[in-house]
Amino acid sequence: MLSQLESMLLHGGILACTIAALLALLGLFWPKRFGLAPTNVTTAAAFLAFLGYFLSRFVTSGAVPLANVFEVMLLIASGLILGYFIVLLKRPHPALAAWVLPMAGVILFAALPLGSILGPASVDTERSDSVNNPLILAHVVLAIMATVHFAFAFLVASMFLLQDRALKLKRDSVAVRALPPLEVLERMVFAGVAGGFAMLTLALGLGFAAEWDDLGAWLTRPKVIASLAMWLVFLMVVAGRYNHRFRGRREMYLVMTGFLIVIIVYAYSATMAGGT
Image 1 (cartoon, helix red, strand yellow):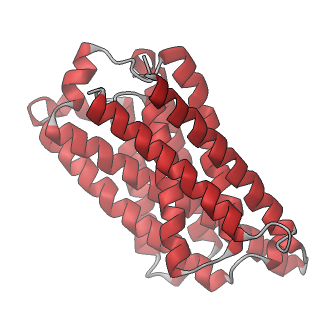
Image 2 (spheres, one colour; image 1 turned 90 degrees about the vertical axis):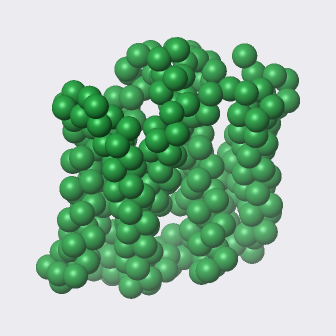
Image 3 (tube, one colour; image 1 turned 90 degrees about the horizontal axis):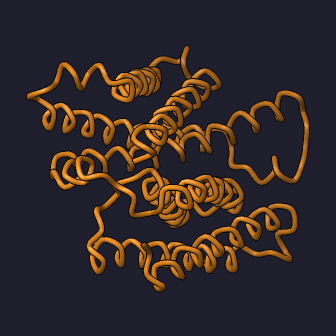
């Protein structure tokens, strides 16, 4: 069960993220009325609330870290928010908030039914022992960080395709005008994919090491097979960066396909062992 403080931090963070997403969307169409500053302040409040929640759960309460899909999805949303601020420091752009923050909100609202059904602390003994294994814990954390990178790449890839289509059809709108140039978007996509691919490679390597004694059975698990397929898709994206035939829209479609496999992997995880 959650403590009163943890419940307040969790629901307060979700509320703040929802408000930030709405402000970001309004700011896209009415930038003078809804500036970026209120959005960023509200987003920072959401991130700090989630950080406080995790610290309270794992440090104060001593709960098993990241032991179920609910908290994994919550961490992915928090990672997206953190990534948003990192990108904002390097390349400020108002349109980015209108894409990243609603995505984080969707992930949070998708996680809520899992939390209400399973409970944030739901975890069986076998799963608890597994997560307490340092190699498995590092594997899980790296896989989540890779997912955050791929989610960001997916968002920017969708921005690229929208911008590319609008330019070809010679359509003009407030949303399209607010998007960065195609070259900038393409670099952002590759940065997200490259970082995620490196982390996914390390995560799979740690998984191999942790399950070495039972590697044959581990490799036949549907989630592992899907993860390897996802790794191959993003390997094609990284390799295609150096081949002009796979640049542009083809690269973006591959990125989006890879992220759909990510969703399938986590959806499968949610259905196994009651979602734990």
